[in-house]
Image (cartoon, rainbow, N blue to C red; front, top):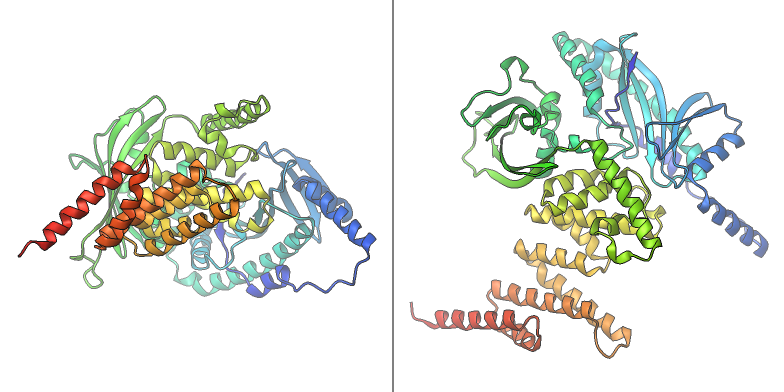
Length: 569
């Protein structure tokens, strides 16, 4: 029996192979006649209307590939097994859009006693290739580790299918050679007593890992490595040294014999003490030591609803000194966030999403757009797939102020979408920026301002007022001096838009955004001590019905500051 777990890890592979396969310079085309141009447009339009499944079937027919179709676990996809150029491939293709996953399975196998070497090889080579991924599975009948390659995209094209299959074969040969050399070089140095533990972890991962074709599932959000990655600095699994879990009285909740090391610490779910329905701890302390830092996670129940147990998470990091490996004298870095234990199953959550997506379309068809919820407006017009589910789920989490979970759930979606950005239509481009906005907004609410800046600067360029408001708020609350440049630039753009519109009066949205910018500019000048400039701005706001009281209080504050500054020491 083969346990199929997809612990997808980015593989180091030859850049030359990548460039050869996907970066060949385009050959100049001969001049086209009017009729050939029209034919080309017709083919292009026809191609745009085809789904990933249509393109795959066309590819299989053109190449006379032996094939067999099947129904995968994801009901929105169609599975196809086919042979091409001597290789056996498995593809999951959408019959509705261009979503596509191709797997080149079982291209190499090694003895199971080399599991730690395979894991180490992948860890050492992570991050050198973005699009292709390698997965491992364990064949307990043959007692061997099986390797497979995969490629995924949200917008496959007909030429890409042939290129991807060719590259899979080339990369498989490259990985096979590199791994063989690595095992030969390092095999004698490995400690054989790690074999049983690593094998156990491999089997355990099979039941916990989700396919790389989907973004992070809810149950993967709270692994120790995920929390540390998003709230602090990313740590590799091999830097984790120790883990302890205790209650408010100091009683150990994890037996000494069960205390793991290395990659299993990274995979430890910090919500585990609250997942047992027979126990209800008032406080849990989790301490994790790495080669560089000492982390403490304190979890305390806040409230409970029918569907969710809300917890307060206090996460702290203390650096260790380089010589003694003891805690240094530097101030610890801490974050306090609200997290939740969902009492509903993942199946139930996804069923709700499917219903809300269909209900949103029904409301539009019936002319009841005013009845759409905010979550429904976000996903309206999108496919029923994993990315759309993550976006819907994130909006729900944001409303519950579960900001960390928003970040952990959407960042994989954002990274996946980046690779297909230039193939998106208008609606999927909007989705891409909405995902970036929600990540940035969540980081802003977590007061991780620099991380928020990356996403919010990107979405600020779109021109949506709510995106720009979040961007400016992040600059103001982080006391970032760039706020003067950015707020003035947005003000200039707004004035130009109004002038170019030819309207006699600005609309309500323009007025609201203008006054927001003026209030923020005034407060920024006040914060940095430029009382004259702040005073001029707030005086201009006195004529506004919505900002009058705010401006009046700020002017009183300015007069008070001036009087205080004029007093002798």
